[in-house]
Length: 430
Image 1 (cartoon, one colour):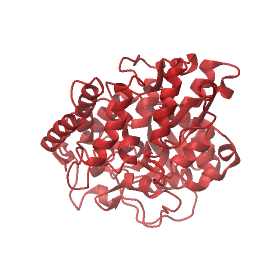
Image 2 (cartoon, one colour; image 1 turned 30 degrees about the vertical axis):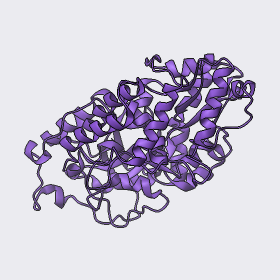
Image 3 (cartoon, rainbow, N blue to C red; image 1 turned 90 degrees about the horizontal axis):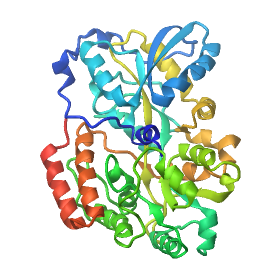
């Protein structure tokens, strides 16, 4: 997966230091501010009108104008200006704009950044429906008992596997449990596959890469009041992930350059990896004609037969409106329109971003796509990173700890104990 799509998955940019309070940067936060006077508590059903400025990031910024065209046809008196910003500078750009009071009216917001900038966001109108969104997705936009936006698109990870190589190794189906995943990797190794399960062993998001194992063994990053990185569930998931490296079934020396995972999957150097929806097109493009018949997708294997399901990572972005905006009514009407299942399907066709509305998955274009079926199923059981503004610091520390674990220079127990200690020192933020 290339670096742009990786960043879209984790919805995070460059590692950052702890943010100072936004009010200290000059934001108006008092109860009598103009921002509060701009608040929209209810929406009527009239067409939207007026000018609106929107910031969108990366690929979404490039695709959004066509989506906006469809909105403008239904709302001819509304005029939306889209500004595209790169992922690499987006976080800093938001921070600077908020401090200076130069925010756009609304924006695409990474789900891991919601807590960072929550003081700048307007609350959703009371009659803006949240029906149809899974609970975990709504949790992204609910900060301190306030709903500060709506989920726009979702991302998760499923298992990609080479069906042709699996067949040579004696497998005619996807692994359904951890034991089967381990056995399939072992059989692939014996059949000549160099790196049966490709995992990210170092660098940005090495820690997040194993999150389906943590979550599927009842681990979690926090319990709401403190970090729980050395809990039994977290250690169990980490031990299983690390066992692949220990047994030679995952390589600690993989090429981490953009696109290397796709190339290794197409060449057969690796036969299994965890990927997002954009990997489908990347693999087909790199492999050329006939490649689509050589691989399949499946939900992440569950821990054991007693488990109801696995739980994967929930990435993606949300729509937010800035409380200083005087165009909040138009912004919320656009968000309401964009959240309709039919329009989420339209956005998928333009971008391949996964819908957040459950009903959208009943559209034939998604429902009948065998490669997408696993994503629809996995999104029923996916969990986001915690909505706290120290998450980036802790995950960066965790990447370094995980590399030591995977390389065998520290045990899982000692490594997670050290990570817990460092996370406790950083804290949960405000």
